[in-house]
Image (tube, rainbow, N blue to C red):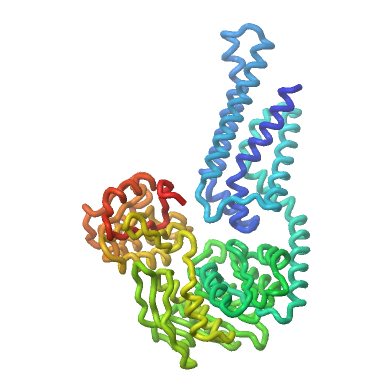
Length: 532
């Protein structure tokens, strides 16, 4: 009886733990069930295949071990008990090891045990528990249930969806009602393919020179995330509310705009992010434009010029609109000129069409940050702020963690861009490295999180390195093969390229190569040996 109860609980827990990767995928994809189905199909070799192999192996051992031990142990009752406990112990060890490995799988966002995730885990456990009770009644070993660990997560997600929709609707309506009472509140929505979080933080810092500002924290860019911030944090003393609006599906920005009812809409740029869910850049652009379409008649729209779909949306906009950029290539309300980047940060001149202009200094690096500052300065200017107030705010800006973050160590300039996984961001980081002093050392594993055209984009990155770095340290010979080909196509000295197996080896090699005054860029990777 004790063995039966323990086996039921341990197998149910093991199957639930094996589904952690699927749960993480679902959470990253904002609980979109079709996306989970797609990812399970695409990652079947990493999740389904090991689960099936483990389930089959344990089932075979469970069946044949008593036969094998019969040759050395004559007492049947003792032999049967020993086999059962040995197999159960083996299963528990393998399931725990697999759980630990899957928790360490690289993801864009860390796995978080939220209330919603807790409800999902509980239901997954109940499904597995029911399976562990029913299968033995059919004379089927419960270990086979392990083969479908990911699909128990999918089943639970489908089953719990109606309840989650009801819970979410309550939070959403409560937040919407709370915002509706605040007719005095300046509401700003920010969206775009890239730079939403950076732009939000910049705008919050600038506006805080004059207003009391509440902005959504990182990763709170969904309808439920924004609803939670409004319900829990919005106070009467707040004068401005800034909501970052993310989307992976058409209609999500419209839903967020319906919640926030922004008077000011900001689009940073339109690019190739989330094309796996949008299907095309045109669909992504239309989704971003939902924010502008939701603005009231007296609303204002702000666009970062990107020489692409962002400029097209600017032309389509019928509301009061303003555009920003670096230089004078296109007509802009606010533009940055004379950009200078160095070890102390960035210096540039901000010029407004209303005649105001001022020099700005910031610790932020790169032209992308300057573009975002110009965009946010335009919003601040239209909200009545002087250029001196804007300059004070710009000087207070702090780099986002692991995003072109400058760290000085032993008189060596270290640029930490480890959070970036996009080709555009990598190209910008290389331009920053190009302007730094000393010998320039690049450490990278390439672009490892691309959904499509990974080989072509890594090859292109390799060609862009030439002229920006003097030494290149590549992590993983296999995954950086295309990047290496790009380097060699531009005749980069092969003697200046080193291959290592992992981040720790790269950090050790940097310590060996780098000297006082040199500059090191960690692009898409960050060695654990250097701390976090």
